[in-house]
Image (cartoon, rainbow, N blue to C red):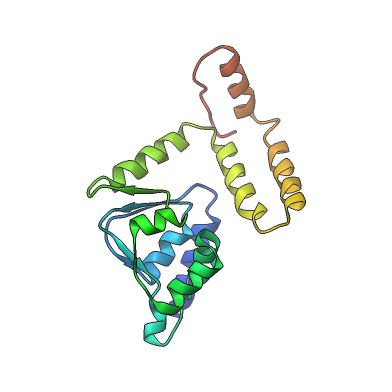
Length: 180
């Protein structure tokens, strides 16, 4: 029953239509790393360490860890990390494509918030559609993913935000988006 609650939490993070940013300042082992891997972006402190070490306990990652890690770093690296339970650094995670940025101690949250502010300045419907298109498109072949992208794009054509964005561009001013 407890694990089912965790499962719901992991899926809720991945299915959240708004971008989710992890700011990891300390060690993230097991479920901590799995939670971060469910997010859209991971900003990690240089001092942080990471591992999916569940095999040392007679279990295995059960919070999307095997799926999200493999999609981020590739099958071979994911197998190595999960089956050996080896810890890795923030720099390694960045080099392998699992993390977006390595930050100095104390600066992780500020960097994550700066990214959140940059995202929030854009049209919210566009951001949500782009997130959805990237996430689901990667689960399809290229042509089907492209068709999915076009459908997502077409849903934005008649929105107030698109009209405002084009007007603002033509008037050389910053747009005021309303999420409609």
